[in-house]
Length: 107
Image (tube, rainbow, N blue to C red):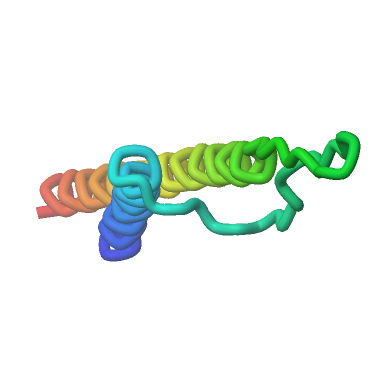
């Protein structure tokens, strides 16, 4: 049980670190977030014999917002996984202490 606890703690911390690293790649280094929504950006306004195109970053904002929600979910899931691993470690330590005490009483 102790091994599962360690695996859960390491896996949870790895998930948290990945989500922070991927978010830093998007927000600090300027990489594009995953393109989940393909929204045509821009409004075309016809003026006399020309068309004026106004670019709106709606698609990018929606994709960044979606990434933020997903990253928050990853951090939450990683923290829960780590917490479960810590509880498994505590349980296995308490179980080992009880076995040690019962062994000392018998001998």
